[in-house]
Image 1 (cartoon, rainbow, N blue to C red):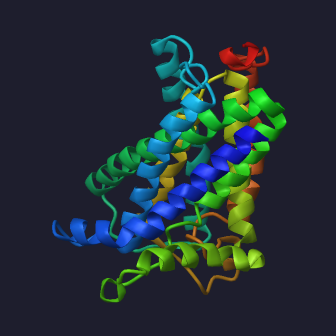
Image 2 (cartoon, one colour):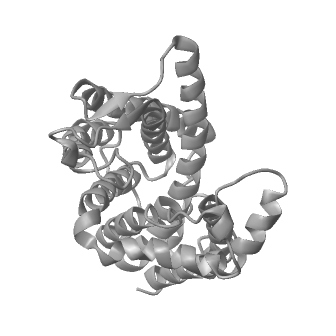
Length: 300
């Protein structure tokens, strides 16, 4: 329980940093160009989490590559990442095509090969960065610490619930003209307000939790986060491309299948995740038939 509480405290501290420092950081960044206020808050939270993770890892004695999810030789590790990326793209492509074919999302750009390539490269870059940060924090350090203290199942559950929750923070929009000294607090409170209406966020939250469980189970099976980074990056890549080339049809008869959270996750994506997870898990069970060992320092 100590490890879980420590990571939750770190997350709360990152929100505190967002509340206190985002207005000043936004004014500084605005000297270079126009940047949404909530995006500055999001980046500040990442910086706070990264700095805090370094300190927390030392305190919890997560002191080797295995503990952080980077165990194993480099070449096989990178191979797992690459295979995971291909699986992630293959996982998400049918879902994207289904959304477009059924009219749940409608194309809003004139697609051509060059534009699609640019969007794929941009999405892949963002996907790899997001996956690297989130997997290192959640399925790397946090998973190892909670597993060592409480076992694999609590680690899978806690990391998945927190993973889903993080997607609802720093999304509250504050217009540039409305930014003031207290806007950082407004950003945090506005983000937390989503949790005051659980019925409205249930579809997105359950979907993201299911994705988190799948990623955590792959982490457990493989013993590192390489495959999870690849899978995660593949999903984010196609999701970003889909969001950039199409828009949710709010008048579609089955529009309720896509959440209002981002117009992509929701009941349809949840159902697809549960279905497509079966071959993904079977693949990793065949590749890693033995249960992944506990983090090296667990025996200390």
